[in-house]
Length: 198
Image (cartoon, rainbow, N blue to C red):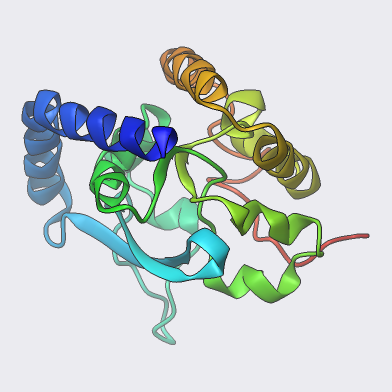
């Protein structure tokens, strides 16, 4: 209850304070990449229940001859890369937090297609609401392997507290300023999860 109250107050205040930034970024995306400005995708939330996550769009709609999307590295624009490295693309998720789909801090919401690929231990990451940022994000972000990331997610589930959340939020600001761990080695973003080794 305390965590949810903190999420409501903090996300509501952040949306108000950052409204000029959000508006400016939306205008720049519209100007540089056109519509839509927002990227919407169904992701698994608390207990794996689906919800629609919203972010700022960072990739152009480029398709190959067969009509399939080109690789991330070819669709990610320079402005989109800046939005990702600065985490400005995550700002619309504050609305998801206010609605109750997400929390400010928790395991990052991944793809629905990953749900059957988790081990029983890894699936415990869904025992809490997904977060805009999380313990894995401040301990390596996309530079971590999937196995390492999921271990950190489960550690957060077992050790979560309001004070830990506040610590993660402060560390997130530091990570954003340094722009550390934005992508996996050799990848534009993060390689696809294909299942647990264990």
